[in-house]
Image 1: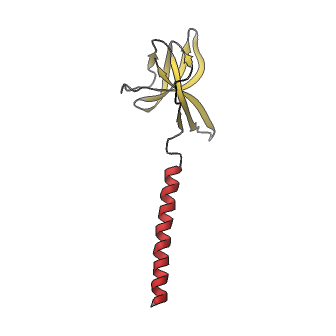
Image 2: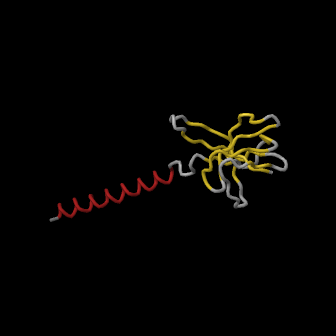
Image 3: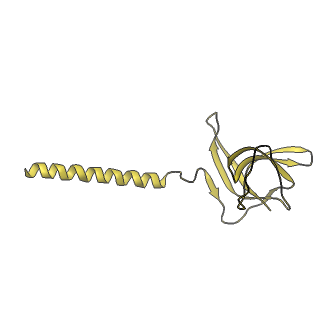
Length: 122
C-alpha cells in the first residue's frame, strides 16, 4: 500500500510540474505577435500619405507610403490610438509625417519572415 501511495504521489507531482512548465513556456513565447515597440519615437519615415492595402485590426493596417510621384515602395504597419477604424484602399494623410514607433515581424505566404516599421501619423 505504501508503494502505491508513493507511486500515486509521484504521478500527481509529475502532472503538476508538467503543467507548470507548460504555463511558463506559454508565457515566454512570442505573445506580442511580432510587435517590438520603441521606448522613444524614432525617425520620420514618410511625409504626405499612405495607402492601406490590408487591415490587420480595426486600428492597425499594412500600407504603402506615397510620395509626390506615387508609391516610394516602403511598406509600413500604420497604427493609431484614436480608435479610428481603417479600411482597404483608404488614403491616410499625416499633418507632419509618419513617425516610426517600433517594428512588426510577420511570416509571408512564402514562409519568409518580413520586418516592417510601425508608424503613427503626426
